[in-house]
Length: 354
Image 1 (spheres, rainbow, N blue to C red):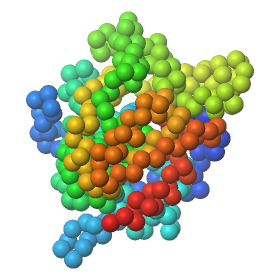
Image 2: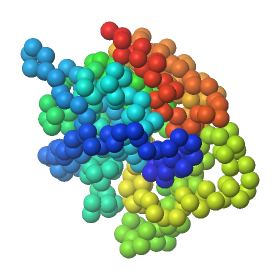
Image 3: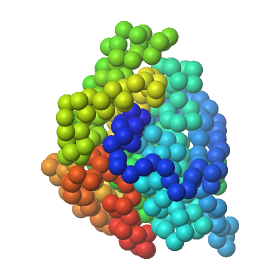
């Protein structure tokens, strides 16, 4: 989910975003440089993967780290988004599911995102056109060569991270003992899902200021159109109607989102949205034999439940459980995935699985 959509969700929620604890103060930050990283396009370059960690690695009798879990963000996000109280306050504290006194929690910024290597660092549209396979291979190299982690107890992925969890399950079977993909489907990005993404890309490219990616001024109109599509794709219609019941209140919200204060880089956003172009784990789902907790929400425009895709595909994995969170004024549309109160009891059951 791209950055402006995350801002929208922050504006829509009733619960304050000020955590009881500032989890960022408990975190460690580092950059892992992957020398001569090979992209699927055939291009090679040094890639920086920025990673945030909470907790301390524990080693078993053989010296291997045995308490690592990784949480993967959505399109346009970063590892820092998992410090928000609706996620962190529900999971990281004493006795909680991902209690950082027990678990080593790894929060990477993916290629093209956050503080990792991305087009806006200088290469602009000359940056390699990465895809999900590249992003997952970079995550794996960051873990093994950077952090010394060769096995994960859990991969929890939200939105794009949800799709990455399926890619992980097929590219590196068994590396993660459990998978928790939240808010995605395991099919090619096609139909309406690809359409709104392609419309967002086209809007940016059609802005005269974009100039083939070599802009001197941000293509604000294109970015605004892309953000508008993201609002429609990511919102909960019931909640929006309840919270913004008049034309004036709805338009006031839009004005606050579009004030430009958190406008993303246009090239970064193009790459982020387009990186899903060849995602399609459907043919290989049977390779995923570890326990899987797959959760979507019934108010998710991006992954419409009426298609019935997840319900069918979950049966292709021998240890997968699919849950559809019911639609209500309290759910958060596509963003329901980062509100742990909706799914932490189910995650507890997954973590207890052998």
